[in-house]
Amino acid sequence: MEANRTGLLEGVLAAVNLGAIVVDSDCRIVLWNRWMERYTGVMADETVGRDFFSLYPDLRGKRIDSAIVQALRSNFPSVLSQTLNKSPFPLYADAAARSRDERMQQALAVTPVEVAGAGRHCLIQISDVSIAVGREKLLRDQAMVLRSQTFSDGLTGIANRRHFDVAIDKELRRAKRYGNHLSLLMIDIDHFKPYNDHYGHQQGDQCLIQVAGALSAMLQRSTDLLARYGGEEFAIVLPDTDGAAAYMLAETMRTRVIALDLPHEKSPDSLVTVSVGIATMCGADQYDVPGLINAADRALYAAKHAGRNCVQAHATIVA
Ligand SMILES: Nc1nc2c(ncn2[C@@H]2O[C@H](COP(=O)(O)OP(=O)(O)OP(=O)(O)O)[C@@H](O)[C@H]2O)c(=O)[nH]1
Image 1 (cartoon, rainbow, N blue to C red):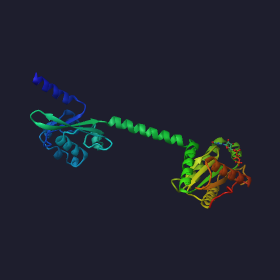
Image 2: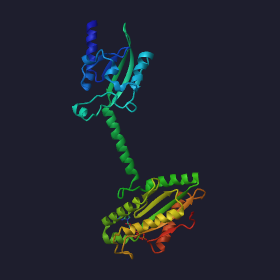
Image 3: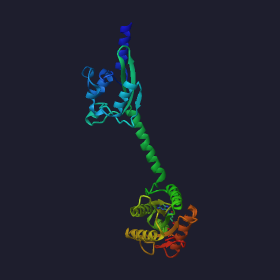
Image 4: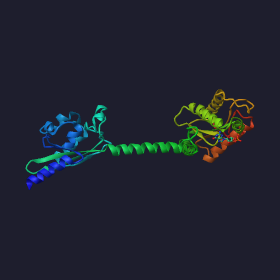
């Protein structure tokens, strides 16, 4: 009966789908199951009787070292997560993974085991969590793609209106809290309806892409944000930027669009041009988001009224 039980236990240990190593109180390996043989390529008769750390010297001083000490000395079990203890054992799913040095993703459990008449031992269990880790990474990547699609404009690739709404709200609060300047630029392509009518909607789209690319390339700070505000209208949020600096940037952007040299037969300038409206606030101002947008919109309207292809700043500009 006892022989049957031992045979059964050996059979189970050989069949389980996880690695099992048992070390004695001197850290000598007393058990090394078939799973370990399969994924390390090292057979049980080469390991049993050897010191665990002479086999894996790299693991000395690592988290598993203290987990084994805690199990043997204090009868204390540990679970080592994959996130904090990246693949400690050199285990490989197959020969190809071994040649690429691509270790199996591992989760470890270190458990004290009392062996009748032989004192305290320690069982190290290793599970292959590669599939779960891979699935988690896939989900994370998909979430990132979805997030970037939610916040970017499908045509031009720059931030969309939703992104703009979040950014302007955040930056306005920040400007108020710290008493900083905040500038908003509204940029509109001139005579874009006749451009579309003359060159066709597809070329109109290409024009939007080129203008967006040129404007985006001119932003230097990571906190500056260019967004597609509406059809042929762009908005730029410029934190910590006073009226004078915003005006200079707006002028440079206007001339940069001219330098794109995009023909526009139906415009008096014969080229694609933009008009720009600027509103600037400083922390103490009583602007809210609609007020700031309204001020920039009115400045843009003034630029259109002044003949287009120019920059106008809102009257209460703060330098
Ligand atoms: N190709 C293209 N055209 C767009 C898109 N969104 C808006 N438009 C066009 O942009 C044009 C905007 O025209 P208007 O608002 O009348 O202004 P405008 O002709 O540019 O005149 P001003 O702004 O006063 O210089 C309309 O014809 C819209 O159809 C888009 O995604 N692609």
